[in-house]
Image (cartoon, rainbow, N blue to C red; front, side, top):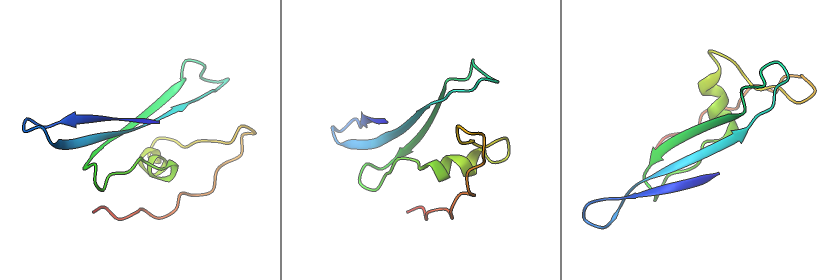
Length: 82
């Protein structure tokens, strides 16, 4: 995981990119190797996306499986936005 900081014209911090990268492996889809999720937020209150945040976003199209092929428990409730 990592972040990048963008500086505003006045020299102060403006926004911060919170980047979450997950390296993936699939025998069925070997071309799929990386999932990168980004969130632009205020550096004072920002946070990285959790696995549950990402799973809720992806839920209309798919989900993650454990290496043994079993499903993960449902994601927890959303955290409030500030």
